[in-house]
Length: 388
Length: 91
Image 1 (tube, rainbow over the protein chains, first blue to last red):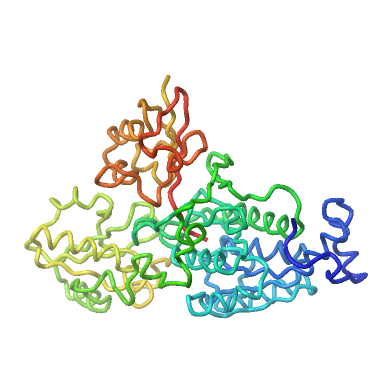
Image 2 (image 1 turned 135 degrees about the vertical axis):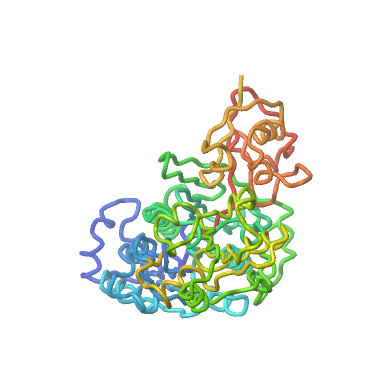
């Protein structure tokens, strides 16, 4: 059963479009009606990053008539390893603008609607309401629960994908008969337990694999062909190159699609345990990069300790530091001398704040966290230290 | 005949670097306990302090969600495969 308008209300194809989509038109399962369905379709992409890039490119090429893009981010050099919607020339530009230009070049028949905003409980229903389906390419749990609940409330299918390092997951949530995201994961992991791609890394190709599964499911849902990935969770393992599906069931106790006790959007930051404005580094004694530089130039005797992991140490380090990764910090406690000043750093200052707390709990008094970590050091003191 | 417990790569570090583990046990909980017993770091990633599964780490016994069976008490047939699927959110 295709989504969208009845067959007699579908827009016609122009001569240009017939030529462009000829390889679709000659597949009987798609044909002229399927292509007209794609043209009539209104798809909202949440995120124009790793997953959103292949999704946007292929849905545009396939002839989806209206592509909405919700994205507030700016293109960063570290995005380019996987976010193929954006180019080197786009670094520093808004992703919605970069995406719109690229999609216009790829297929001028596609109307791109840029929603330059973060999706929030305040704007989600209003934005999603105007689309036939949503493709979730966000990068955090709070937005995933938000997208899910909004899709359940509005009755819009949610084509889901998520990735981490070498592995990905994809399925279609929120159809009439299928489960929703909360049926699969009733509660999110506590903040900090599951690292983001920015913290833990991701194989650049992986969002291509998973994003194209999402794009494929989107096209199938619009054209009403094949077996949609409803009630099945596809697990992608790029290292083993294995694809397997496990069964998903609709949970009758699910507060969103089961009991329907969720009648409006909630505070998803709070639901995911992220308290507004909370700073994990709060209350930890800090040293600024300028202060550290000055003390070192003055010949101060201090123990400068890098608490990142060895593979990050290999990327670059502050000269004179030693390595004591946070993951095995307890074992390294005996290497510290309580009579010396200790300065700890990591990439941006969050992990080293945890290490400072561990030292404080062990009785150390002269311990400081390097504010902003090695990134700040590279920015303000020594630009030869690589940023990553 | 042993059972196979298949972990995601993200948990392999806590399990001696391996994603596939042969284990023994009559129930899913026993199989999980067998592997967790060998790798102390892994245990808390798979189950909470009371020994119950987390709502964000899902266990599939031969591709069926154990929550719709008997949870960790679900009996495990010989040669079965248990797949661990934690929530991830990257995009």
